[in-house]
Structures are given as C-alpha cells and as structure tokens.
Length: 75
Image 1 (cartoon, rainbow, N blue to C red):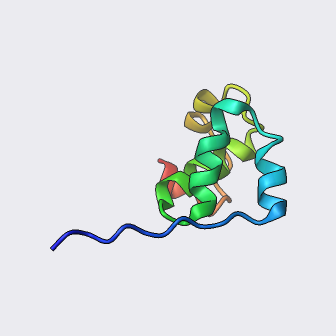
Image 2: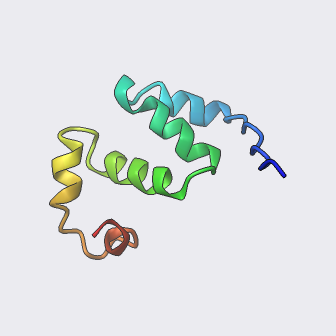
C-alpha cells in the first residue's frame, strides 16, 4: 500500500512575511519547518534563526547556550 503524502500546509501571512525577511538560502528550510512535516527541519531552522543566519553552521555547531531546550538535540 503506498504511503500517503501529507497535505501541503498553508502558511499564515505572518509566517510568509517572516520567511521573506530571512536570507534566500534559508527560506525553503523555514517553509519546511513551518509545514510541520519535519521535526529536524524545525530544530535546524530555529537554531539558525537564533544565531541570526550569519555563519549559521559554525555558530550552531559551537553553540554554548546549554539552557536552550534544543541544545541537547543539536549535540
């Protein structure tokens, strides 16, 4: 039996407005995170949002904010 695809989630106007403010290279990730399809995408998007999208991979990798609820997941 084929797997059912999750239906596309319509973004709110606030979400669309926010996505338009992030760098183009991260806009697809943010839309995927908002869709609820991927928890990994949501965590990745939030971490990049937290570090302001600048040098994101390095800053996330070197994150020292151990009080963040996502910190243990990112390790």
